[in-house]
Image (cartoon, rainbow, N blue to C red; front, top):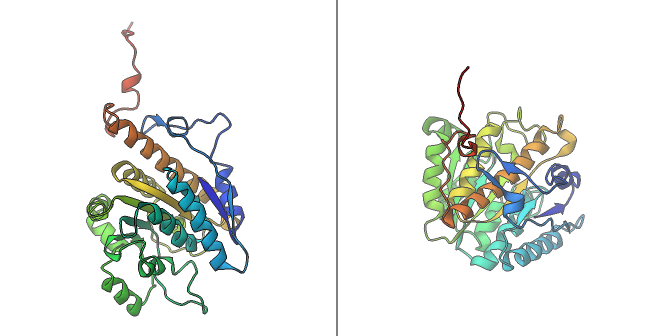
Length: 303
């Protein structure tokens, strides 16, 4: 796990301060694992982002992510804005193979813009650059939570040409989030060996995540996002994660910083549970009552 420092340099710090407890333990009530103890989790520190030199910054981050992925670890990157998805996913694909990593993208916005303010790079363009440069196939690009009034017809046509699958909120509401996730997962694992998970906190309604630069009303609830992230990391072979667009100056009572923290903890806990189940333990049962496996042999009666 490491952090980027670009522009909003308080963003990673806000989640880091809420991330790792002093005793190195965060047991998940839902998944019955303690990811910080069951996994080997390291905070690799910050990756320098050079103000005014975005290409150098992105290159530096890609190298750092590739180093972590090449060591057999799963990089979890805390942004920073969404421009970092380009080096994050590229660094992972460099290890697992270009075109062999699908991308599951939670966001209010498609981030498939072309040239913005004279630049190829920015927080509204990384998904186009990822497809154009080859690390991720357009037909293995799953977007969840889009809404609002951007992008326009020309960009949507480009996305359709790439055979991207974008789930707009109206479809999610009509069909149900779980149904759409199940469909997306089947696409993500077809002809791909791993999945990169990219979470922009503005996928959540700004009433529950005000701390973001481009809020869009009508999003997922924080509960829906956490459940979805848990499903992704439990059911899919996740090989990398980033969590982006947390902007502490806009936050209220640290609502969004805590949400970003919980997104990471849900991802780690689900990865730990997936590994435990794969090792032959009793499979996770989400319907199991919380205290069922904690009962001793004491007999309880009534007086």
